[in-house]
Image (cartoon, rainbow, N blue to C red):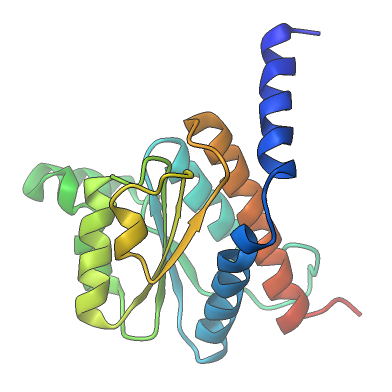
Amino acid sequence: MNSIFKTNLKHFAEAVSTTTDEQLIPVQTCTEATKNALLTGNKIMLCGNGGSASTASHITNDFIGHMKNWTRKGYPAIALTADISVLTALTNDYGYDSVFSKQVAALGQSGDILWGFSTSGNSKNIINAVETCKEMGIKTIIFTGKAGGKLKDLADIWVPVNTDEAMLAEALHLFYIHSIAESIEYDLDPTE
């Protein structure tokens, strides 16, 4: 087996196995806040850059589609990373730092939730989106690496993973959010 694969698998397993119950408290807080937003008729907006943009789009599919319950109604979720026309127009006209905050201002309303993904915690366009959310009464949940960067202090709920290595952090984010989405579905629409 390839030594890089084994090394990465070992690092992933270490990051998971050394995660404490205390470090998982924000995961439960995120689950409850997101579930409550959905129960009150609000939506989830999601954003990230690069691989994290794919994570935002991926979990949007799972909210709108399903995790395990194929018969449930979809949960309202919007990946702010998915509309290439909007992304390129906003970037061209306002700069990339405004690409998510402009969408939040146009699409968001008080009571909504923003999930942001930034392995460094320092993505300027996500910081700007969080600041717009604060002005609009939108709760922010930010997934980062272990250090958290600037976003750890700006987020309403900060969900760090137990590594600062970008590739592993992205993989752990996907594991966390799948677990969160499955928990929400289990509570709101359990399979019969």
